[in-house]
Image (cartoon, rainbow over all chains, first blue to last red; front, side):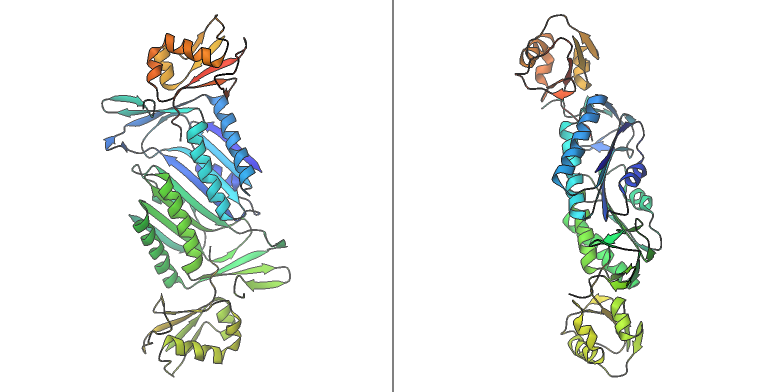
Length: 138
Length: 138
Length: 77
Length: 77
């Protein structure tokens, strides 16, 4: 039950996968979040991510801990990018290794769902005509 | 709705991920199956995979097609290895890109579950004291 | 008519391919012939027959130039 | 006492950090103070307050050396 938790400028998907893979695990499930080139049909030029880094790391560690408690998973990597990101670029990668794939799928989906709800990270979307903080207003 | 379907000697996880990623998708879910170093506590030395290749490709294409019909997913890659594989080595990678992550998780899990049921590929497990074709007998 | 064997079926049949001259009629009749030839195949968890790279039902008729494959229990992934 | 602002809250507060001398007492009282200072924060979908890097309830008491963070709606991932 080891985890790799990081906030970085540039995501290395391979790093997350290599960290969780081991000869004792049978399957790895990953989620990779990338910047979409549009939001509700409106072209997105770029995103800007900001975090409350020490707290974000603590919340990401909690997610890994909760996943270890709920499922039979062996290793978890959660890496989130901050700074400027262009369409197509990777923003977050979560990798989970488990002896059986069902647990890996469940834990990975739990991790990304929970990350979006609890980890203090914010993104600003830049359009042709200005920028907005995503989800800030009802 | 494009797919990359292959049977290879050596899996390149990155190839599957790069194929499905696009600026129009928001998330990629992957499943990577690796060789476990034991089965029910008995050490596994290696696996040997064999396929009925032209039919396996057709069945893998059907899986991608069925996923496209059932979920809003954009691209799917399914790559399976054949030949000798050592513990820790990658055997199969499935990558699915979708505008929304729920669809990507569902389609990826469907793809690996269905692959195990319908794609004509067989593995032989090698132990210290001999080899067995996995799941052949009740 | 060419029969292809894979995995454990290849071991039980003693080879990957076999040419037979008698026409099996249907897939079900081919299954009966298969078990007569290789009784050990009865011990397998499940055997599927593919005709021209598609899983076939027992009722399906086999034509002279069909490609028949004996598919023992799958274990890919 | 140091207050940290992030995302849109940083824009509304006009800066990333603020030193205040008055003691807010509880997290709930701090929220009231926050809305008085920056009425636009009322328009946000949800504002959470973290005390020492942990989400706090409104009942929680704030100590002099606590690190207070104003957490506007999250949008990571």
